[in-house]
Length: 269
Ligand SMILES: [Fe+2]
Image (cartoon, rainbow, N blue to C red; front, side, top):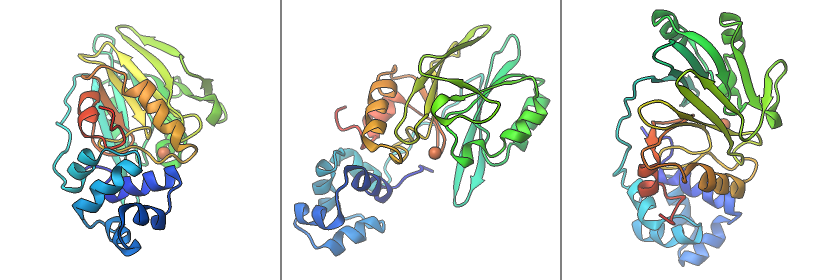
């Protein structure tokens, strides 16, 4: 299931662009109550198509979202595994990337329950090299203490703008390698101040762990800066190769190619 419906996307864009419901109703030449109906999930196609460009969204892609006509093709990639845990009505994802020869692994975020992740590591006999945090919103680091106790020799990394005690601070361009795997950290801020995307080379195709910077068919809210969130996504994620697998903090995995086709926040593609 996708993380965001059309009403979530429109809400994020309204907030991000600083456009009020009355203003958008006026632009679309409809009553404000019509906008309220859309924000409650109603699919009023003509109005949705009319307000999309005012909000910098693609009308065509927003209508695909409203019709629930797309979800990304399931991703199966050797060396990459996703772990979902509950967070209120949502779920949050943590990931493991494993180097096949050495059986060493990186963990990305923790989720709210890391027991299945720990079992997977134990059953597969993986050695945890590092724990890398995309950002420090609670649902992403909830189990950090548990993982620290379980894997005391693992290095832990976070962006310097979201520092946590006893965690190594890194910034844009930080690199790490693990035998055949290479990783580079990209500062994709806007949803959070120190949001990081980790781009990994060495698996069968490029993989980017994006945290809440981008979701399949949507993006995390621009909680710090909507414009920065859009810009860093444009510059650092949407410029990756089309076959690059994107691993968001919420919702299914996707690819850059699919996001170009279906993500309403990027009308330029
Ligand atoms: Fe977040």
